[in-house]
Length: 185
Image 1 (tube, helix red, strand yellow):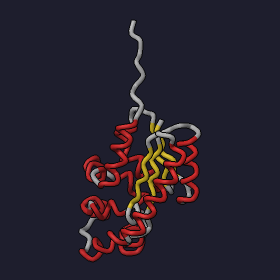
Image 2 (cartoon, helix red, strand yellow):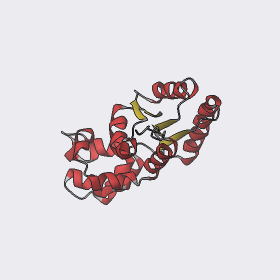
Image 3 (cartoon, rainbow, N blue to C red):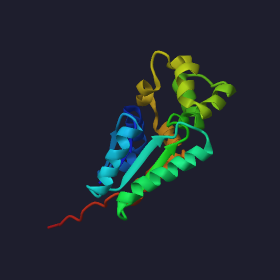
Image 4 (cartoon, rainbow, N blue to C red):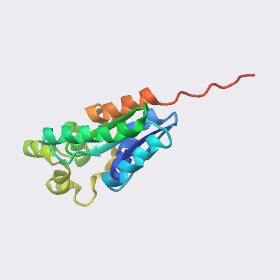
């Protein structure tokens, strides 16, 4: 069993869509908690006590490369202390998970039904959550979380190529338990 622990129900829902094809064989579960402080100890417990590989997927909440790198080192040390050789991965979305929609703007543009202005694309790389909440009026009534069911297979393929999503997918595929052998008559 591999657990992907993340920091919100929105993250859990979006990641479940983006990982569905690699989770289809079972042995992978997604857990969304309320913030990093809630998710981090649970993820470490699963690693230490249940002896399960873990992906810890969080927002960096900054674009400062020095702070992102330091937070990554701190979290890697935190999980390594209890891993005892088990694989784990810490993935930070810089600055937040919503950045994947600005990295692949065609998906967002299809969801809102228009082209994004260049300034919104740039701002979305720095503060994606704020831009989605305040800069895209089409999302005022129906938030992005309510539109996830509108993602097409083509949209999902595009979003899966984001480096952080691709890293999680590779970890899951590399560490998934293989199907048990079945006896045949």
